[in-house]
Image (tube, rainbow, N blue to C red; front, side):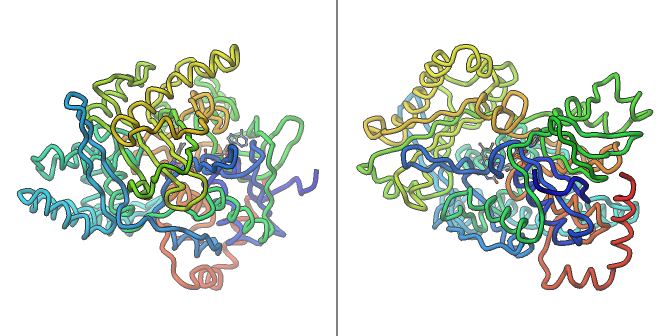
Amino acid sequence: MAGKREYGLIVIGAGMTGLSTALAWAETHDLDREPVLVLEKEPAPGGCVTTFAREGYRFDTVQIIPDISDLLKFYRIPLDLVPYGHCLARLFLADPVKKDVRVYPVLQGRENFRDYLVGLFPEEEEGLNRFFDYGQKLLDELEHLKTEPTPLQGLAILIKCPGIIRQSGRTYRQYLDSFRFRNPDLMEILDLFSSFSGLSGDRCAALLTACAAMTTLQGSYRPRSGFISFPHSLRKALETRGGEILTGLCVDRILHKEGRVQGVRCGEEIFRASRVVCTADTHVMVEEMLGLGPVTRERVLGPVKGWFKKYARVKSAPSSFTVHLGLDEKLDLKGMGFDCGYNVLTTGRAAHEKAFDLWEKGERLTGEEEFHMAVISPSALIGGKQTLIIHVTPAAAEDWEELRAQDYDAYRARKKEAARYYIDKVEEYMIPGLKEHIRLTDISTPATYARYLGTKGGANSDMLNVPSNFGMYRLPTRTPVEGLFLPKFSNGIWPSLMAGLQVVDMMTGGAVMEGRSRYVHRENQLSFFFSMRRKPSAQVTNAGASRV
Ligand SMILES: Cc1cc2nc3c(=O)[nH]c(=O)nc-3n(C[C@H](O)[C@H](O)[C@H](O)COP(=O)(O)OP(=O)(O)OC[C@H]3O[C@@H](n4cnc5c(N)ncnc54)[C@H](O)[C@@H]3O)c2cc1C
């Protein structure tokens, strides 16, 4: 196999976090002296972010990104993004008793959306104004956050970010309640943003959802040639700069000695480095790759306190059940408004919350009276053969993996049966006569997600977006094993890209964003940094390399 065996940095996983990390390293280091290697177990990079084809139908696994133009400038890659039009999303609020549905659009542009809501709910004007102003204030405060604040910086954060501090332990439901809205439909509309975070409003971290709402409203996109084009562009940019990606190689061990990381092992092959960034599942990393079960931790690392205490509380996100449909051309999905980013079909937020209660018991919500799902048509915006995706989160792991391994025919029959329930609901409340237009059905179960993502039970991510996993409570990126980093900002493409920049910023003492937790592009930022700090930066990284 080609390639050097001793690296400045090894990155495990070529998803958005891993690619962003490797590119940030490439942007800030001399790769002849400190090369970077990304190891990916799948044949192609992208992780959660990919596009697959079946009989000429193309399906994206992810659906929406906010404005990431700052980051694209940093990576120096072009990406042809198509903006969603006037309507960002729609809420289909179903009434199973009356068998009807009320449809509310979420309009692009904060001012547009606020004006629209005030027009619909004039008695809520004051609360709505406060909701949008406060959301903007939270976004502004983010500029002052530091990834690893010194005590003095911590004090400054307390003064400059009162909103963030106040909301950091809250759920999105508590956040919404603080605006004292009274109209139940308005609460349902605003709750739609929690679906973006893959959680019900009762559980989702307020800060995450409130900021995601404000940023997606300001502009949301999908790549014209499918989401796969994004990791492809990042890979190309990395390789052009001299970085190395090896695919089809699964890391089974992170090597460490006397509390320091030394490299990784993939079967028979060993790759050495004094810095390793792991973007795989946190639990898999600790228990399998490091081999640090509860008993061995202390023996290997000495008295271990804070990090492992937090680790013990890390909650993984649920898995999903996704139905991909290829349709004939007789349906006019664009004419039906499916060229927006996201449609949520629900009987209300209580149903979404109940789905999570059931998920905790290992069950799925499948009633006639209560349901909750997202429905998206990528082709309606970017063209191609007509596609429709029904995406259901949460989906419990159940016994999907065992069934697939033991009895593939029974597995196929069961997933087809489960998919029928969701297709029926979409036909009943959104697209009359849908079934007669279906030409292809491809179904992903938690077993599919487990296989591709390498997570336990097919978890969509190992950071459930609850307050205790997020913001100041999240598991620190710097692990107790020196030189080993685990960047987990929160789930989502933008946060994953940001996590990659943050971790390189930490390793270089601020080369990427001067210790801030959020990247803001300034022309010539990097060249300015290096003209000021070239020598100290080189010393820091050399010291790391010599330990191997
Ligand atoms: C179904 C779904 C829909 C989503 N929709 C959206 C959306 O519309 N908008 C949005 O912003 N976000 C969305 N997200 C979230 C977003 O896609 C993810 O948060 C983000 O892509 C995660 O990137 P990552 O690199 O941290 O992790 P991953 O994408 O999981 O990448 C980790 C990589 O590590 C590799 N790996 C794991 N173990 C090993 C090993 N032992 N050795 C080598 N490689 C390994 C995996 O194969 C994978 O490629 C969605 C997620 C899912 C699952």
